[in-house]
Length: 169
Image 1: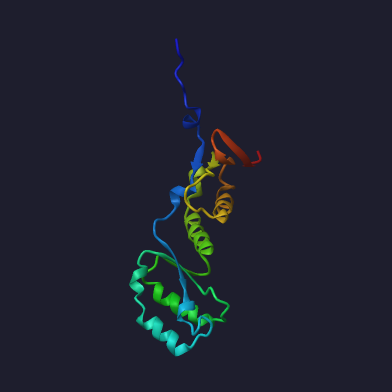
Image 2 (image 1 turned 60 degrees about the vertical axis):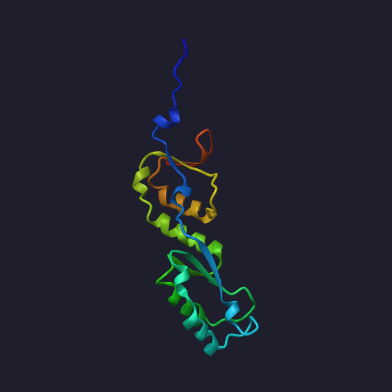
């Protein structure tokens, strides 16, 4: 007589949060303004504004855009702001910085909108292995968001998790 195999994890109140499930679709793009500078180093306002006015901004529809300058040029703040204003109607999100900062800020928005009541007084496991680039900062933001609601927080998989937090009785 064989016993039925019971998945105790599935029957438990354990809540698994996989940040990969929240990963928003949309291409991530680095917009480098160096190509609009004289010899990649000098911003000439008239020429720069001409580039801004003639550029096809519609190519950024539904994309996440990080505006940067990859040369050692000294760029006035207004130049980044001018580009951001043009991108805003098209892009899902625009930041000044690199792609890592962009991803962190995208996840900051996602976690700010996460409903922590879903984990109220339940043990939580935050899944660790992902195939998508989840920034480390997203995990920290998530823990800070849920720690007051969750009974406990673990990291990893149900079969091999690392305990991180347990609510004091």
